[in-house]
Image 1 (cartoon, protein in one colour):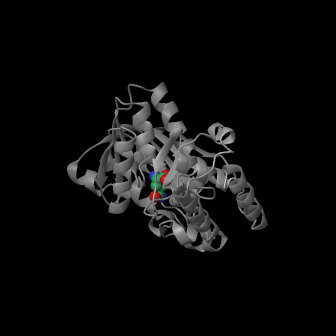
Image 2 (cartoon, helix red, strand yellow):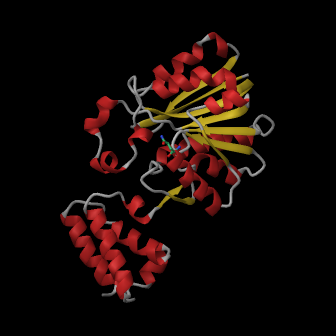
Image 3 (cartoon, helix red, strand yellow):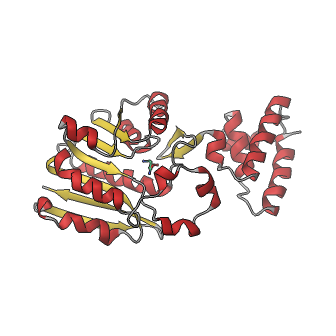
Length: 283
Ligand code: GLN
């Protein structure tokens, strides 16, 4: 069959099932290493029997409910393609906003940021994006999940970045070594168990629970992380965390404690309907 014929057939099935009708293009262009415009000028091309078998297999997996990023083992984030597998969360566009906020802060304050730590790093999308833009910084990512760190290491190699990845339960490792950081980033697990019912099966059946849910209405990881902050930062630091859209107030609260008394700026931005991020700066 030609690419055009395959796309027509696949589209009809996707439309009938009310699934994303862009998926067949994504599978073919990724597997054949084509850009979207390459794909459109190659629609008369016949797939070889192995290419066809691969497409049929990928497409069947998608129809059966697997996220396309896990099938193709790749997901775009902040202009780069990252390797992903079911040990890590699939990168979300909301997290790009956090990286954007960190990028702008670093650009405006080049003298203030030298050591960056991303906690709960998963596939490493956050520290690798930062390191790729700012090779001069010392960037570290940490995670409690060893399989996730293997994915992060693979991305570090593929994207030719030099992030240091550390196996640690939150920031325990750094508290023990006494290391300090100028910038802390995190997109930790923050979904409350009670939100399960509203979540899609694509997420619940395939993405790692460890990366999604946190106790205490989803706030537990923020509380632990903020509680440990004084041990891993000097007087001046910047923290940016992705938060759930209802969590702004609760996450801000611990920052009003005495230990952050020199706080100069604290802002919470609820960006899209669903997710916001919070950044704090003390000086
Ligand atoms: N930091 C990774 C991401 O943003 C992983 C987040 C997580 O596992 N909670 O995708």
